Image (cartoon, rainbow, N blue to C red):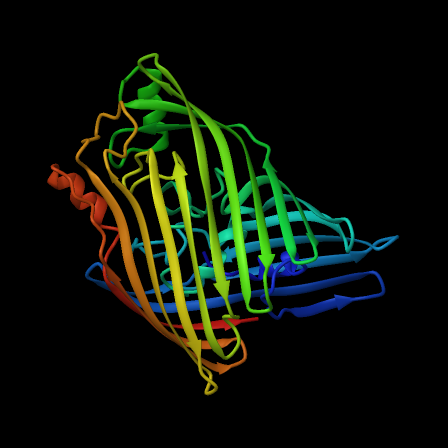
Length: 402
């Protein structure tokens, strides 16, 4: 869950972090800036060493002065893959799964007023992200315990907790309180199958044939809210919730209505971008909100993310992070024809990193991950599949921010 320029440009009124962009046009009414970053790294993990893309992106931010204190704005952001396609797949999407050179990350429009707040429409960071983003400052190993990148480390578009699709969002602040409210207005249908490595089209065929290993999922609108309280200049408290509803239609004729729910809170001390100490932690409880590493829906789980950092006066920033997502055993909704009630799902790892600022917004970094996960199963092949995307690793990279 990386801090993006997009989140900063639009949510800057309501958050404390800052970032630069390049202004390419400005008159008395309009302005246009371009931002983003290029990140390339060498990764050694899962027995492979490879040069990969580090979620590079470019965005254009548009602002317009309106009457009576109102402002209009729009943002378009694309992910960029400057190093070419790569076959390596590892935890938390170190590089995007898209093969295209450009792919959509964010895109929304809105209006805002200093007194009345702001309203935005489009693909944007969900309100839930306000609760948990403060722990996600590792450039390589983001957290996958905060309920943001759901459905096997995707971008959180489906249930609106990450870069949500089709989101209507309202934000405002009253004194030390900042609030975000959202509705994700959509109706999505997709197919899932209890079969490893099956394509979407093949899964749909099985469902149409009445195969009991196939299900059709009708995922409807979701709703979320987040509250941030700035207790002092250095201490911030967050809390929030996100809820959705979906229906699972089994090929054999059975229907099941399922609630997708996550709620939690966080605490943050300091400023990650300033010299000195920084610490943050958040915890969440979730139900039917995410999947395990082979795509099975998790009934309920607890997630915890934490980070402790110190930035020295010599432009060196060090940090240690610890994340755990624990679903325990008997976590898969029944019936599921690949489910063993004794299967265990516990994603757990620590990250140690050092970022050296060669200049403002230009970072040379090294990060190492130690994995402590437990994906125990009586099925050895299934256990291997669960474990293959979680591993120890080390990365050395270069981040150039516009």
